Length: 197
Image (cartoon, rainbow, N blue to C red; front, side, top):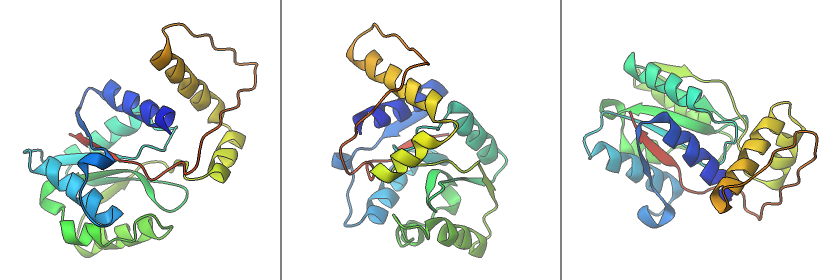
């Protein structure tokens, strides 16, 4: 999944915002929720007032999504980028609204995450904006579904270009050819990236 992770990191870098790539070796905690919550808390402890978290498995993520999240945070709102499978590809959070314990106890890595997080935000009075839903790639079946989609061709070409950019400085893109990309399982559940806005 290094190629997809690299694509997301390249998108984050293009935003020009401060960012922290918190890898699994940098994380601590006994569950995904604990590790994610601790990673966000560590960025807030550096003095940032807002954090935008993005996953490493959303090929359609663009800098426009990131800048839209920055704009939402600037208005005082939180921001959610829902995944089609019921999770999130992006979360924008203010430090004064972040409760590590409540965040950690959410049903992470399930289709119920988006519903539970929206309910938590409503319960504590957080106003949130929503970005367009995007597909994340958690499995081989997600990849096949994505490839069938209308936006997949451009995203796949960008990922392929990134692979060539990383391995050599010469590449060619031919849009009339079919590209086959083979990923090893599991595709997802890597480290999120935290952007400090």
